[in-house]
Structures are given as C-alpha cells and as structure tokens.
Length: 333
Image (cartoon, rainbow, N blue to C red):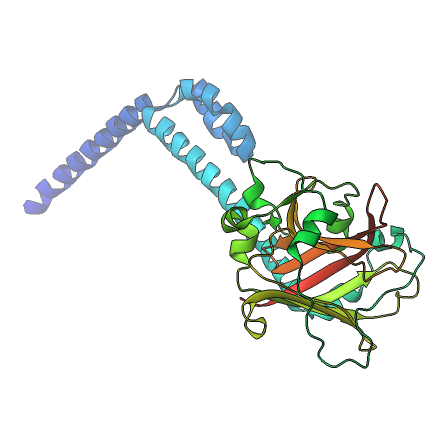
C-alpha cells in the first residue's frame, strides 16, 4: 500500500521543484538587464580590448545591475594595476639588459671600441708634453700654489639654485662618448668651490674617499695609437689625505701628477654652462701648442664612472679647445 502513495508524493515533489525552479529563474531574469541591454553586455563587451572597455564602460553602465557595475569598476582597477605592472617589468628588464651588457665587458673592452661620435672629433696639431720623462721613478706630485690659480683663472661669481647637484648625473648613460660630445663648452663660467660649497656638493660628498682608474683619449697628432692610463683618488691615504691625480702613457712618461689639499679651493670650480665640476691646471700636458688646462667632470652614478672633457687654452685666447676625454671607472669607495 505504501508504494501506492509514494508515486503521487514523488510526482507532487517533482511539480513543486519545477515550479520553484521557474520562480527562481523569473527572479534572476528580473534582476538582469532587459534583452537589449543584455545583448550589449554579452555580445559587444566580449569583443572589447582593454582600452575599448575603459573608454566605453561609462555608457554601458545604464543597462547593468548594481552587481555588474561593481564588477566592472573592479575590472577597471585591475586593468590599471596590470598596465602599471607591465610598465615596471619592462623598465626592470631594460635595466637588467644594460647591467648584463656592462658586466659582460671589461673596462678596457668597453671603451676601446670607437663610437660614431669619435669620428667627428678634430685632430689638433702639436704633441704631448709629459711632466716627467720615462726615466723618472715614482715622481712626487706637484703641489698647488693657491694664489697663482686665483691670478690666472678669473673667478666668475654666481649662485645657482641647483649648484649642489653640479657634476652629479643620476641617469643611465649608454654612450659615454656621445654624452661628452653633447657637453662641449668652449666659454665656461667658472666659480670657485669654497669649503661651504664643497660641503653641500653631491659630487664631493659622494666621492669623498672614492678611487678611480681608467683611460684618457687625446686628440693631439700622433697619440691615436697611444694608450694613456690614469687614476684619481679622493683623500688618498698615500698622499696624507689629499686628493690625487696621476696620468702616464704606455712609454712610462708621467704626464700629470698633482695633489690637492682641502685648502686648495681655487683649483675646483663650478661650471654653470653644463653644469659640471671643473679641475684647473696651469699647464696643458696634452698639447704643447697650449698653455692652460681644465677637466670638466661628470660623475655617472648609475655606472660608477667619472668622465670628463679635457680643454686647453693658449695664453691670450678667448676660448678653450677640447683636446681629449677622460673615462675612469670607480674601483673603491
């Protein structure tokens, strides 16, 4: 007898279930956008690219439920974060490639190759004038006569809002030769860097005890096949805490060797034309047709390089002539 009642009851439950399913569908359909809006949402939106969606979403919102609007807004936020992440990844990948290219080359190999910019550099008549011959052994550095520099090199008095950053370059430089070619200044404005200026300078505070080694390229006749190497040490222990530069050719001739005490203010200048940090000399070692010299320094912080254009000037000349470039790699802090 029980089976007789089970069948009608089962049929009743089936009918109720179908009815409840129908009601649930009606409720869901009533919450969805109307047919026309639904077509926009499902048909057109599926074909949109991200930028199209960002541009069109405002117009689409009229036919959406509150839930769909919220989901759309969340999607827009995700698209923005995704774009930012891709841009960051691309930047990091470029930095990695540049770092690998630098790491895979030695310092010598990195700068022996001639760039297109070097072919445009003029070769100057004259010959180099070493300070000491090849027979001298460990020549003592020449000391600075402060007052003489103040007499030879006029002091251009100026104040610059960003002078504390002169000579310090934070961007990545992929072609050092092109970088230097773009910063040639034959009529510089040179202002003495006194102790207070040096104390505030990013260039000097960063390089306070740094040491560098590298090469000098000279544009004087007969030096194209000659290798010139040098070093520069700030607060050198071997020079009683003085700054020191020493440059020699491959024949053993010492071209330049000088120490700079903290009291030697007038040899260091700010060049407002670049801007840069200049180091003056009363002798041009790179070409005997000229008398005075200065090196226009830039510290490339991203690569740990100290680079410079080297200029010389005849005694009564009104402008300076670039006679070479300096490229030193940082070898110590």
